[in-house]
Image (cartoon, rainbow, N blue to C red):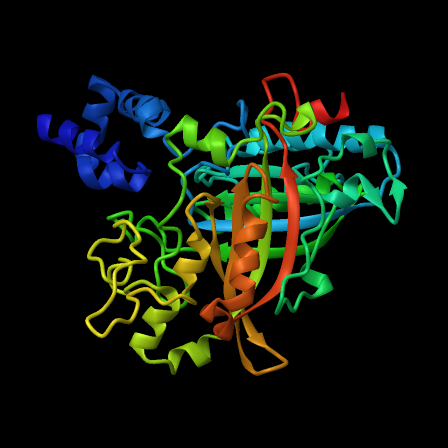
Length: 429
Protein backbone atom coordinates (compact mmCIF):
# COMPACT_ATOMS: atom_id res chain seq x y z
CA UNK A 1 0.00 0.00 0.00
CA UNK A 2 2.74 2.48 0.94
CA UNK A 3 4.63 1.83 -2.27
CA UNK A 4 1.48 2.37 -4.29
CA UNK A 5 0.76 5.68 -2.57
CA UNK A 6 4.32 6.87 -3.08
CA UNK A 7 4.09 5.97 -6.73
CA UNK A 8 0.83 7.84 -7.10
CA UNK A 9 2.25 10.90 -5.39
CA UNK A 10 5.14 10.81 -7.82
CA UNK A 11 2.63 10.95 -10.64
CA UNK A 12 1.39 14.29 -9.34
CA UNK A 13 4.63 15.80 -10.64
CA UNK A 14 3.33 15.17 -14.14
CA UNK A 15 -0.06 15.00 -15.77
CA UNK A 16 -2.09 12.18 -14.17
CA UNK A 17 -4.29 10.02 -16.37
CA UNK A 18 -6.57 7.09 -15.56
CA UNK A 19 -4.10 4.81 -17.34
CA UNK A 20 -1.27 6.10 -15.10
CA UNK A 21 -3.31 5.26 -12.00
CA UNK A 22 -4.20 1.76 -13.15
CA UNK A 23 -0.66 1.06 -14.27
CA UNK A 24 0.84 2.27 -10.99
CA UNK A 25 -1.60 0.80 -8.49
CA UNK A 26 -2.60 -2.36 -10.32
CA UNK A 27 -6.23 -3.30 -10.86
CA UNK A 28 -6.51 -4.98 -7.50
CA UNK A 29 -5.03 -2.05 -5.61
CA UNK A 30 -7.24 0.67 -7.02
CA UNK A 31 -10.25 -0.13 -4.88
CA UNK A 32 -8.15 -0.24 -1.72
CA UNK A 33 -6.57 3.09 -2.51
CA UNK A 34 -9.92 4.70 -3.32
CA UNK A 35 -11.40 3.31 -0.15
CA UNK A 36 -8.53 4.31 2.10
CA UNK A 37 -7.50 7.81 1.18
CA UNK A 38 -9.26 8.42 -2.13
CA UNK A 39 -7.60 9.15 -5.43
CA UNK A 40 -9.32 12.52 -5.18
CA UNK A 41 -6.94 13.42 -2.38
CA UNK A 42 -3.94 12.69 -4.55
CA UNK A 43 -5.38 14.69 -7.43
CA UNK A 44 -6.22 17.53 -5.07
CA UNK A 45 -2.57 17.57 -4.02
CA UNK A 46 -1.62 17.88 -7.67
CA UNK A 47 -4.07 20.78 -8.14
CA UNK A 48 -2.72 22.57 -5.07
CA UNK A 49 0.82 22.22 -6.41
CA UNK A 50 -0.24 23.47 -9.84
CA UNK A 51 -1.78 26.55 -8.26
CA UNK A 52 1.29 27.24 -6.18
CA UNK A 53 2.83 30.64 -7.10
CA UNK A 54 6.36 29.28 -7.21
CA UNK A 55 5.32 26.81 -9.91
CA UNK A 56 3.62 29.47 -12.05
CA UNK A 57 6.64 31.47 -13.08
CA UNK A 58 5.58 31.91 -16.70
CA UNK A 59 3.27 34.89 -16.12
CA UNK A 60 4.56 38.43 -16.65
CA UNK A 61 2.17 40.99 -15.08
CA UNK A 62 0.48 43.23 -17.63
CA UNK A 63 -0.36 46.13 -15.33
CA UNK A 64 2.35 48.34 -13.90
CA UNK A 65 4.22 51.64 -14.04
CA UNK A 66 5.87 50.65 -17.32
CA UNK A 67 4.72 48.34 -20.07
CA UNK A 68 6.19 44.87 -20.00
CA UNK A 69 8.14 43.58 -22.98
CA UNK A 70 10.71 46.37 -22.77
CA UNK A 71 12.99 45.49 -19.86
CA UNK A 72 11.50 42.00 -19.57
CA UNK A 73 14.04 39.26 -20.20
CA UNK A 74 13.75 38.52 -23.91
CA UNK A 75 11.50 35.57 -24.66
CA UNK A 76 12.09 32.96 -27.35
CA UNK A 77 9.78 34.49 -29.96
CA UNK A 78 8.34 37.79 -31.11
CA UNK A 79 5.31 38.56 -33.27
CA UNK A 80 5.47 42.21 -34.26
CA UNK A 81 2.75 44.03 -36.17
CA UNK A 82 2.21 47.55 -37.46
CA UNK A 83 -1.33 48.83 -37.99
CA UNK A 84 -3.10 51.68 -39.75
CA UNK A 85 -6.12 53.37 -38.18
CA UNK A 86 -9.30 53.37 -40.29
CA UNK A 87 -11.71 55.09 -37.92
CA UNK A 88 -11.94 58.89 -37.90
CA UNK A 89 -13.37 59.16 -34.39
CA UNK A 90 -11.19 59.79 -31.35
CA UNK A 91 -13.68 57.98 -29.10
CA UNK A 92 -13.37 54.86 -31.26
CA UNK A 93 -9.61 54.97 -30.82
CA UNK A 94 -9.88 55.32 -27.05
CA UNK A 95 -12.42 52.49 -26.93
CA UNK A 96 -10.02 50.30 -28.92
CA UNK A 97 -7.27 50.79 -26.36
CA UNK A 98 -9.70 50.00 -23.56
CA UNK A 99 -10.71 46.74 -25.24
CA UNK A 100 -7.09 45.90 -26.01
CA UNK A 101 -6.13 46.45 -22.37
CA UNK A 102 -8.75 44.04 -21.06
CA UNK A 103 -7.87 41.40 -23.63
CA UNK A 104 -4.12 41.75 -23.16
CA UNK A 105 -4.39 41.46 -19.38
CA UNK A 106 -6.34 38.20 -19.74
CA UNK A 107 -4.07 36.68 -22.38
CA UNK A 108 -0.88 37.40 -20.44
CA UNK A 109 -2.40 35.33 -17.63
CA UNK A 110 -3.10 32.48 -20.04
CA UNK A 111 -6.85 33.13 -20.05
CA UNK A 112 -9.27 33.29 -22.97
CA UNK A 113 -10.65 36.73 -23.80
CA UNK A 114 -14.25 35.58 -23.44
CA UNK A 115 -16.39 32.63 -22.46
CA UNK A 116 -17.88 30.37 -25.11
CA UNK A 117 -21.34 31.54 -26.07
CA UNK A 118 -24.28 29.22 -25.45
CA UNK A 119 -25.36 30.15 -28.98
CA UNK A 120 -23.35 27.84 -31.22
CA UNK A 121 -24.30 29.92 -34.26
CA UNK A 122 -22.14 32.83 -33.05
CA UNK A 123 -18.34 32.97 -33.50
CA UNK A 124 -16.44 32.38 -30.25
CA UNK A 125 -14.91 35.52 -28.71
CA UNK A 126 -11.54 33.81 -28.40
CA UNK A 127 -10.01 32.06 -31.41
CA UNK A 128 -8.97 29.13 -29.24
CA UNK A 129 -5.53 28.10 -30.51
CA UNK A 130 -3.90 28.90 -27.15
CA UNK A 131 -6.42 26.85 -25.14
CA UNK A 132 -4.60 24.59 -22.71
CA UNK A 133 -1.26 26.31 -23.26
CA UNK A 134 0.67 28.09 -20.52
CA UNK A 135 1.03 31.90 -20.65
CA UNK A 136 4.63 31.27 -21.77
CA UNK A 137 5.83 34.61 -20.34
CA UNK A 138 3.68 36.46 -22.85
CA UNK A 139 4.14 40.23 -22.94
CA UNK A 140 2.13 42.61 -25.11
CA UNK A 141 3.56 46.08 -25.74
CA UNK A 142 1.64 48.86 -27.50
CA UNK A 143 2.99 51.93 -29.29
CA UNK A 144 1.77 54.86 -31.38
CA UNK A 145 3.47 56.23 -34.49
CA UNK A 146 3.88 59.80 -35.78
CA UNK A 147 1.08 59.33 -38.32
CA UNK A 148 -1.44 58.78 -35.54
CA UNK A 149 -1.14 62.47 -34.74
CA UNK A 150 -0.68 64.05 -38.16
CA UNK A 151 -1.12 62.43 -41.58
CA UNK A 152 -1.18 64.26 -44.91
CA UNK A 153 -0.95 67.50 -42.88
CA UNK A 154 -4.21 66.65 -41.12
CA UNK A 155 -4.69 66.66 -37.35
CA UNK A 156 -6.48 63.33 -37.37
CA UNK A 157 -7.87 63.07 -33.84
CA UNK A 158 -7.25 66.50 -32.32
CA UNK A 159 -4.01 65.16 -30.80
CA UNK A 160 -1.52 67.22 -32.80
CA UNK A 161 -0.59 69.38 -29.83
CA UNK A 162 0.27 66.21 -27.90
CA UNK A 163 2.75 64.85 -30.44
CA UNK A 164 6.24 64.70 -28.90
CA UNK A 165 9.06 66.36 -30.85
CA UNK A 166 10.96 63.07 -30.67
CA UNK A 167 8.13 61.18 -32.36
CA UNK A 168 8.85 62.00 -35.99
CA UNK A 169 9.79 59.80 -38.94
CA UNK A 170 13.44 58.78 -38.89
CA UNK A 171 15.72 60.61 -41.33
CA UNK A 172 16.86 58.89 -44.51
CA UNK A 173 20.16 57.14 -43.84
CA UNK A 174 22.76 56.38 -46.53
CA UNK A 175 22.32 52.95 -48.12
CA UNK A 176 18.74 52.54 -46.85
CA UNK A 177 16.68 50.40 -49.23
CA UNK A 178 13.35 50.76 -47.45
CA UNK A 179 10.25 49.12 -48.87
CA UNK A 180 6.82 50.60 -48.22
CA UNK A 181 5.37 47.25 -47.15
CA UNK A 182 7.80 47.14 -44.20
CA UNK A 183 7.75 50.80 -43.17
CA UNK A 184 5.79 53.03 -40.78
CA UNK A 185 2.41 52.57 -39.14
CA UNK A 186 -0.06 54.37 -36.89
CA UNK A 187 0.12 51.77 -34.12
CA UNK A 188 2.25 48.79 -33.20
CA UNK A 189 1.85 45.64 -31.15
CA UNK A 190 4.86 43.68 -29.95
CA UNK A 191 3.90 40.26 -28.61
CA UNK A 192 6.76 38.25 -27.12
CA UNK A 193 6.44 34.76 -25.65
CA UNK A 194 8.35 31.53 -25.13
CA UNK A 195 5.83 29.87 -27.45
CA UNK A 196 5.16 31.26 -30.94
CA UNK A 197 1.58 30.00 -31.01
CA UNK A 198 0.86 31.94 -27.80
CA UNK A 199 2.36 35.11 -29.33
CA UNK A 200 0.41 34.67 -32.56
CA UNK A 201 -2.80 34.03 -30.65
CA UNK A 202 -2.35 37.32 -28.82
CA UNK A 203 -1.82 39.35 -31.99
CA UNK A 204 -4.58 37.57 -33.87
CA UNK A 205 -7.16 38.33 -31.22
CA UNK A 206 -6.09 41.95 -30.83
CA UNK A 207 -6.35 42.46 -34.60
CA UNK A 208 -9.75 40.83 -34.49
CA UNK A 209 -10.90 43.27 -31.80
CA UNK A 210 -9.62 46.16 -33.95
CA UNK A 211 -11.77 45.31 -36.97
CA UNK A 212 -13.58 48.39 -38.21
CA UNK A 213 -11.10 50.65 -36.41
CA UNK A 214 -7.67 49.51 -37.61
CA UNK A 215 -6.13 47.22 -40.22
CA UNK A 216 -2.90 45.26 -40.38
CA UNK A 217 -0.14 47.12 -42.25
CA UNK A 218 2.80 44.71 -41.88
CA UNK A 219 3.85 41.86 -39.65
CA UNK A 220 7.08 40.07 -38.80
CA UNK A 221 7.86 37.06 -36.65
CA UNK A 222 11.24 36.61 -35.02
CA UNK A 223 13.16 34.10 -32.95
CA UNK A 224 16.30 33.61 -30.92
CA UNK A 225 17.85 30.56 -29.27
CA UNK A 226 15.37 29.07 -26.85
CA UNK A 227 15.96 29.00 -23.13
CA UNK A 228 15.85 25.21 -23.28
CA UNK A 229 18.65 25.16 -25.84
CA UNK A 230 20.86 27.57 -23.88
CA UNK A 231 21.01 26.50 -20.26
CA UNK A 232 23.90 28.93 -19.65
CA UNK A 233 21.72 31.91 -20.65
CA UNK A 234 24.41 33.45 -22.80
CA UNK A 235 24.02 36.42 -25.13
CA UNK A 236 22.00 35.32 -28.20
CA UNK A 237 23.74 34.99 -31.56
CA UNK A 238 22.50 36.51 -34.80
CA UNK A 239 22.37 34.65 -38.12
CA UNK A 240 25.99 35.64 -38.83
CA UNK A 241 26.97 33.56 -35.80
CA UNK A 242 28.05 36.50 -33.62
CA UNK A 243 26.70 37.45 -30.21
CA UNK A 244 24.16 40.26 -30.45
CA UNK A 245 23.25 42.51 -27.52
CA UNK A 246 26.37 42.36 -25.37
CA UNK A 247 26.38 46.08 -24.55
CA UNK A 248 23.03 47.10 -23.06
CA UNK A 249 21.93 49.25 -20.13
CA UNK A 250 21.53 47.25 -16.93
CA UNK A 251 17.80 46.51 -16.71
CA UNK A 252 18.17 46.00 -12.95
CA UNK A 253 19.43 49.56 -12.49
CA UNK A 254 16.71 52.21 -12.15
CA UNK A 255 19.37 54.86 -12.61
CA UNK A 256 20.48 53.50 -16.00
CA UNK A 257 16.94 52.87 -17.19
CA UNK A 258 15.83 56.38 -16.26
CA UNK A 259 18.88 57.78 -18.01
CA UNK A 260 18.66 55.75 -21.21
CA UNK A 261 15.23 54.10 -21.60
CA UNK A 262 12.30 55.70 -19.78
CA UNK A 263 10.88 59.07 -20.79
CA UNK A 264 11.23 61.50 -17.89
CA UNK A 265 9.19 64.48 -16.78
CA UNK A 266 10.35 67.52 -18.74
CA UNK A 267 11.42 65.51 -21.80
CA UNK A 268 8.23 66.47 -23.64
CA UNK A 269 4.48 65.95 -23.19
CA UNK A 270 3.81 64.59 -19.73
CA UNK A 271 1.47 61.89 -21.04
CA UNK A 272 4.49 59.86 -22.21
CA UNK A 273 6.40 59.89 -18.90
CA UNK A 274 7.36 56.28 -18.00
CA UNK A 275 7.00 55.28 -21.64
CA UNK A 276 9.81 54.76 -24.14
CA UNK A 277 10.58 55.24 -27.83
CA UNK A 278 10.86 52.12 -29.97
CA UNK A 279 12.82 52.04 -33.22
CA UNK A 280 12.22 49.05 -35.49
CA UNK A 281 14.48 48.13 -38.41
CA UNK A 282 14.00 45.09 -40.64
CA UNK A 283 17.53 44.27 -41.75
CA UNK A 284 18.08 41.67 -44.46
CA UNK A 285 21.34 39.77 -44.05
CA UNK A 286 23.12 38.40 -47.13
CA UNK A 287 24.05 35.19 -45.43
CA UNK A 288 25.25 33.41 -48.57
CA UNK A 289 27.88 36.13 -49.12
CA UNK A 290 28.81 36.04 -45.43
CA UNK A 291 29.24 32.29 -45.53
CA UNK A 292 31.98 32.70 -48.15
CA UNK A 293 33.88 35.24 -46.02
CA UNK A 294 36.93 34.08 -44.06
CA UNK A 295 36.82 34.15 -40.26
CA UNK A 296 39.40 36.93 -39.85
CA UNK A 297 37.38 39.20 -42.12
CA UNK A 298 34.18 38.35 -40.24
CA UNK A 299 35.78 39.20 -36.90
CA UNK A 300 37.27 42.43 -38.23
CA UNK A 301 33.81 43.37 -39.54
CA UNK A 302 32.23 43.04 -36.10
CA UNK A 303 35.30 43.98 -34.06
CA UNK A 304 34.76 40.92 -31.87
CA UNK A 305 35.89 37.30 -31.78
CA UNK A 306 33.14 35.02 -32.97
CA UNK A 307 33.70 32.26 -30.43
CA UNK A 308 33.85 34.25 -27.20
CA UNK A 309 32.23 37.53 -28.24
CA UNK A 310 35.19 39.36 -26.71
CA UNK A 311 36.39 42.61 -28.32
CA UNK A 312 39.41 42.04 -30.53
CA UNK A 313 42.51 42.12 -28.35
CA UNK A 314 40.57 41.11 -25.22
CA UNK A 315 39.60 37.78 -23.65
CA UNK A 316 36.08 38.13 -22.22
CA UNK A 317 32.81 39.10 -23.87
CA UNK A 318 32.20 41.90 -21.40
CA UNK A 319 35.77 43.21 -21.29
CA UNK A 320 36.00 46.96 -21.81
CA UNK A 321 36.47 48.10 -25.39
CA UNK A 322 40.05 49.27 -25.93
CA UNK A 323 40.41 51.33 -29.10
CA UNK A 324 43.99 52.37 -28.28
CA UNK A 325 45.38 48.84 -28.10
CA UNK A 326 47.42 48.04 -31.22
CA UNK A 327 48.99 44.92 -32.72
CA UNK A 328 52.73 44.45 -32.97
CA UNK A 329 52.66 45.75 -36.55
CA UNK A 330 50.91 48.93 -35.43
CA UNK A 331 47.44 48.03 -36.76
CA UNK A 332 44.37 48.65 -34.62
CA UNK A 333 43.06 45.54 -32.92
CA UNK A 334 39.54 46.92 -33.47
CA UNK A 335 39.32 48.40 -37.01
CA UNK A 336 37.97 51.94 -37.32
CA UNK A 337 35.18 50.76 -39.63
CA UNK A 338 34.13 47.82 -37.44
CA UNK A 339 30.56 47.58 -36.24
CA UNK A 340 31.38 47.61 -32.54
CA UNK A 341 33.62 50.68 -32.81
CA UNK A 342 31.12 52.77 -34.74
CA UNK A 343 28.10 51.73 -32.70
CA UNK A 344 29.96 52.47 -29.46
CA UNK A 345 31.19 55.95 -30.44
CA UNK A 346 32.30 57.75 -27.30
CA UNK A 347 30.13 55.49 -25.15
CA UNK A 348 27.60 58.19 -24.21
CA UNK A 349 24.82 56.95 -26.49
CA UNK A 350 23.19 53.78 -25.21
CA UNK A 351 20.06 52.01 -26.38
CA UNK A 352 18.29 48.95 -25.02
CA UNK A 353 18.50 46.41 -27.85
CA UNK A 354 15.95 43.60 -27.98
CA UNK A 355 16.56 42.12 -31.42
CA UNK A 356 15.31 38.87 -32.93
CA UNK A 357 16.38 36.94 -36.02
CA UNK A 358 13.87 36.22 -38.77
CA UNK A 359 13.75 33.72 -41.64
CA UNK A 360 10.97 34.18 -44.21
CA UNK A 361 11.82 31.57 -46.78
CA UNK A 362 13.33 32.64 -50.09
CA UNK A 363 13.84 36.11 -51.55
CA UNK A 364 12.12 35.68 -54.92
CA UNK A 365 14.12 38.52 -56.45
CA UNK A 366 17.51 36.94 -55.78
CA UNK A 367 16.80 33.28 -55.07
CA UNK A 368 18.62 33.57 -51.76
CA UNK A 369 17.42 33.32 -48.18
CA UNK A 370 15.09 36.09 -47.02
CA UNK A 371 16.56 36.17 -43.55
CA UNK A 372 18.03 38.70 -41.19
CA UNK A 373 17.44 40.72 -38.06
CA UNK A 374 14.31 42.35 -36.69
CA UNK A 375 16.18 45.08 -34.83
CA UNK A 376 14.16 46.47 -31.92
CA UNK A 377 15.61 49.09 -29.60
CA UNK A 378 14.15 51.23 -26.84
CA UNK A 379 15.40 54.62 -25.71
CA UNK A 380 14.55 57.85 -23.97
CA UNK A 381 15.44 60.21 -26.85
CA UNK A 382 15.93 58.85 -30.39
CA UNK A 383 17.48 62.14 -31.55
CA UNK A 384 20.26 61.70 -28.98
CA UNK A 385 20.60 57.91 -29.11
CA UNK A 386 19.57 55.80 -32.12
CA UNK A 387 19.84 58.50 -34.80
CA UNK A 388 23.49 59.50 -34.14
CA UNK A 389 24.47 55.83 -33.76
CA UNK A 390 22.82 54.83 -37.03
CA UNK A 391 24.24 57.90 -38.79
CA UNK A 392 27.77 56.69 -37.99
CA UNK A 393 26.99 53.12 -38.96
CA UNK A 394 25.33 54.07 -42.25
CA UNK A 395 28.37 56.02 -43.39
CA UNK A 396 31.20 53.55 -42.94
CA UNK A 397 30.19 50.36 -41.09
CA UNK A 398 31.91 47.42 -42.78
CA UNK A 399 28.84 45.35 -41.93
CA UNK A 400 26.92 47.32 -44.59
CA UNK A 401 28.57 45.09 -47.20
CA UNK A 402 26.54 42.17 -45.89
CA UNK A 403 23.21 43.78 -44.91
CA UNK A 404 20.42 45.95 -46.26
CA UNK A 405 17.83 47.92 -44.27
CA UNK A 406 14.44 47.05 -45.80
CA UNK A 407 12.00 48.25 -43.15
CA UNK A 408 11.85 51.03 -40.60
CA UNK A 409 9.45 52.57 -38.11
CA UNK A 410 9.39 54.57 -34.89
CA UNK A 411 6.77 54.40 -32.15
CA UNK A 412 6.16 55.92 -28.75
CA UNK A 413 5.52 53.01 -26.40
CA UNK A 414 2.87 54.17 -23.96
CA UNK A 415 3.29 54.22 -20.18
CA UNK A 416 1.99 51.22 -18.28
CA UNK A 417 -1.60 50.99 -17.10
CA UNK A 418 -2.98 50.65 -13.60
CA UNK A 419 -5.62 48.13 -12.62
CA UNK A 420 -8.94 49.67 -13.63
CA UNK A 421 -7.28 51.94 -16.18
CA UNK A 422 -6.18 51.34 -19.75
CA UNK A 423 -3.15 51.64 -22.01
CA UNK A 424 -3.07 55.11 -23.57
CA UNK A 425 -5.24 56.65 -20.87
CA UNK A 426 -2.79 59.54 -20.33
CA UNK A 427 -2.87 60.35 -24.06
CA UNK A 428 -6.65 60.46 -24.38
CA UNK A 429 -7.40 62.30 -21.13
